[in-house]
Length: 95
Length: 385
Image (cartoon, rainbow over all chains, first blue to last red; front, side):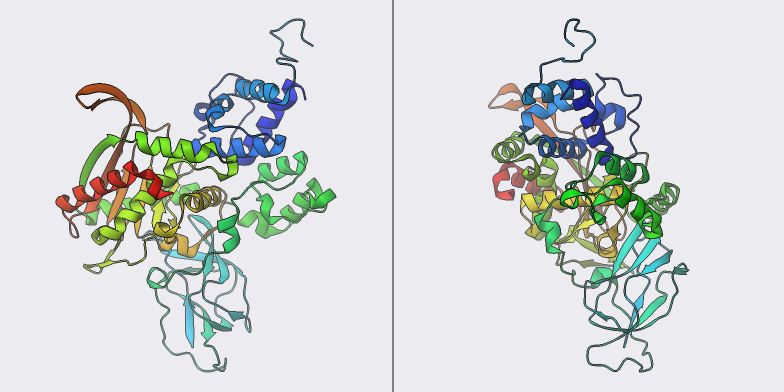
């Protein structure tokens, strides 16, 4: 999976948890808790949803990576073995 | 012959709209069965019955708005012939009735998203439809877009999801104004080192899959519930000039709704649940507060309330009692603060608990003992699991 696909997966799961949240204008590095008014229960549910979707354990200590879209995509890429930044524009040479 | 009436789902409710009958004349009903859906400012609420019998007659058609206390249906008792004339038997108020049995499947399985296609999830999210209520027709019974479209075509799928935030605001205003007008509140605040509780949660979670973990909030609610066993003057209702303590401990949990609004549904017999069960209940309640689908007993039954600000909150809160209850416990956000341990200043996870209580029923001395007891329970947090 590319980083963009992972990012889209996170967006989709947040949409399930907070259907009323508007994700279209959330920057990659924005704290989702601040930007979308997500609380600790929402982040808990996000960790559950992503761990089940990708079949990986996400330790509590790693949940901090998931509070931004960019951090979450990077974290999932690393955990799933996707080359880091496979489609990141700011890293020329990585396609 | 009994009468099933429009219940009062909180001190702030005056009327409700009967949107759907789930049982009809001739149906056998048991205590705890959901017989009707009522639309209130808290969204569509599933209303339970508190007696066994047979529905003899429905008295109010779907779509009609009626005041609290209006007879909705006549119930023939077990072994009773249905067509007898109605006696003026009064259905006991919801909060006085024993708690109906909780559906076991809710206890066992936290609500997690079932298998559904991305398109189905998107469409369901757009319309606020709960996927768990939809039968899947895709591979491995996965829910596909067509299933969601079908569900959307049925009016009730939409009807059950809506929360009228404007109405909810009016209801909060009415309840809180009444509380401030009638209840002589007193407030107590107590800060303590919550490192032990934080560590207990970390240890508990380390060995568990994400869906089986807990948040600190579950322990806070459990601690308050256990403390209520020893401090009954904070657990019950003040009505008609007198206080009635409640034997059962149903902690109401204040749940914020994004975009504004608040509900505080009850977790039944909170003191008897393990932390894991309590966490599953909290997840389920929060999901249902936000999408609709609360039950009548959950809205009327709370005997005391907990309001916890969570990790993004501020240091403390001074909450307002939800009438006819007589106490509410608030928890601020846990924060790293300087703390003196053995004469040294060290950084510790500090939590501030507050109590707002009804001075007609209790005094500050016992209130302080209650907050101390809550601290003690959280210091030995492994006993709360």
